Image 1 (spheres, protein in one colour):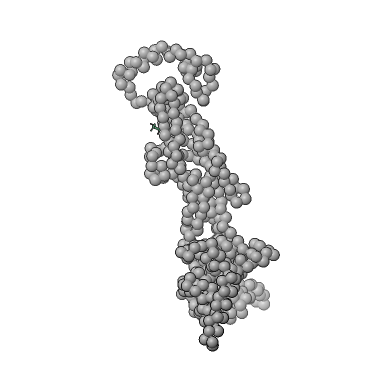
Image 2 (spheres, rainbow, N blue to C red):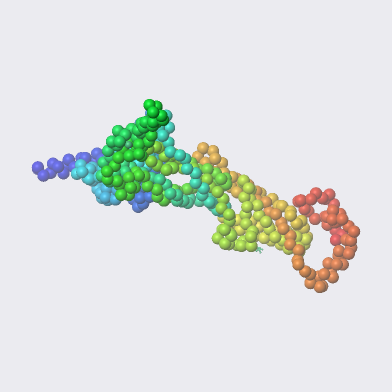
Length: 419
Ligand SMILES: *[C@@H]1O[C@H](CO)[C@@H](O)[C@H](O)[C@H]1NC(C)=O
Ligand SMILES: [Zn+2]
Ligand SMILES: [Zn+2]
């Protein structure tokens, strides 16, 4: 009887927790195999989304904010994660009561990520760090198809070892030299009996007002470390060249200020012909202008003049655009053909950056005609005979005579088959 009571109690509390607390993985929108990076990234997004600064007077958001921090703390520490995976919420609770693991104020946790005092820095008087601009090169192919990718940059982060105190033992003293003010008044003698008082930054503490006896070995007392940080990036189909994507509060973090924004500019990379366009290594590739694409196609004299040819252009997603002329269809050098709907996807930045996959710009194909360097002798004779008939005729008249449809030059529509 005596032995059974605690067991019963334990079951009751367990039941309460099962009912009351959402699964931590679910809270972060992750599965059980999630990596540390995914956990951090989920926390980064969700904590900003539900932060009370962004959701004033919204109790649900506040609860969510707390829940997200708890879930993050439980899962980012390998030991606590192991306990949680095995014993769930109750296991963690017992671990905490036993003195294992720390429990941070959710705002503390937030400020360890983004700096400042756990807030967004929108309030007057709160210092904000500088915004940082980064350029990321994106292949035209990825602008066309869309792509989720990653990039790295050296970001200043609050030192995890000392949690931004700069001290190995967490012990920070008030600077004796300036009494914690960070500044000192210095009297300069200008002339006998004449003094000027100048306020100078305290040289003992570097203006921080605090000194550290045992410096943190990781950040050498700097409280911050710069290290490569991976940022995930979604390129939506048809996004404009030079589009800017803003990551709120993701710039350099510091205990002294709230992180500014990381502003990422997507810049179209020069095409790497070998890798981006394996079919077209001879210097031919798509060029983009807004929603339209441009392509240059080479025709031989025979093709330009006599017609009867096809071209299969492999588009940026691999589908084929077919160009062709029937026998007798002339293409003038420099002619530009419009292929509707084969340009870039049109990207609309309305609200949630929805794009409509059905709308595309145009593809403009410019024809370049290459004449043969020399003629075979029989060929030369035949051509000579034809051109003798045309001696003295102007190009414009010949154009009319040929009666071939052509989209560049106007023609009168009268076809004379006298060639
Ligand atoms: C283009 O593709 C069509 C159909 O697959 C084929 O009949 C034609 O010969 C191809 N043309 C060229 C130049 O490869
Ligand atoms: Zn440190
Ligand atoms: Zn000082």
